[in-house]
Image (cartoon, rainbow, N blue to C red):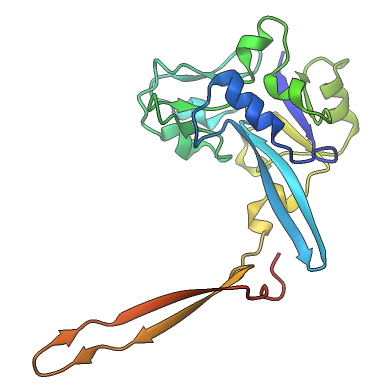
Length: 234
């Protein structure tokens, strides 16, 4: 048994219902998330479009966070879920450094690492993860990848799916359908100078010196709003 997710980005509307449900179900504090929706915009006005991508733990078969954890607080269950034991965690942040997907965070209240754990407490009693049941377009498909008759297994076998950073060798079990490549590969996104709705004007005043005083250089940064966006911002 190997539990995994398929995220159908062709259906996702970016409503954040999964993020809210996850926070409520797992009592995730403000300021951190176990699952979140990433937005990217592509194109040049007026031919632009917004794409959504749901990000979370990939529950890797070869999870680097499990390998690096010095206290075995992170571990891979027999059903393939990568879970964590907050009582074992010492908050060393090694897992945060090891994870190539930025899926872990330090809980601001407990000071220990946490992440998506596939709502293991629900799965154990025959329920689906909270994010799955609240998705209004059924864009999140959970299930056993080793069961050839499961919906998720059939999707992965018959559809062109993508995973994030396959070159890392982590063997992730979070698959994407119809995802925009730039959303999964941040290196494909181009960042250009300037801002969309403002412009930074830097005025530099040289040192003012006299026989009695020496004053340092003064830099004044002015944000001018209402400036049209720089050409080609994506």
